[in-house]
Image (cartoon, rainbow, N blue to C red; front, side):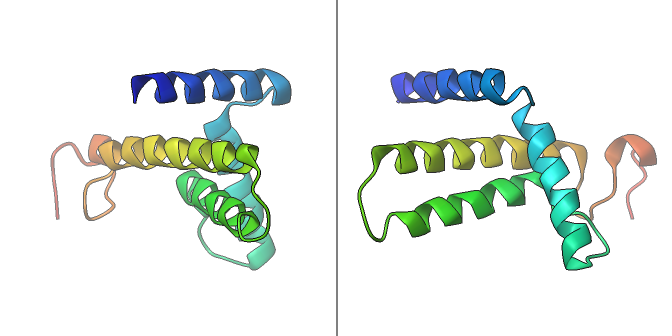
Length: 106
């Protein structure tokens, strides 16, 4: 498993160099853009954007096998997990920012 995670990490590094933007920043920016286009009051979280890309990659697998599609889906899912987990560390279960409420939970 570690070998696969290392390979995914190398691919993400290569993609970041290719596109010049941090993955998390890009997903959050896309979430903001999609939210505006859809007329939503709140931004779609970056991890959810990554999950939607996973869904798109899975859709592509219905016709023809292409290894790159599975690699991309794995990368998006891995990144979504990391982003979601990081967000959970910032927010408690009520969605209150822990650092801003100084331990005062509702």
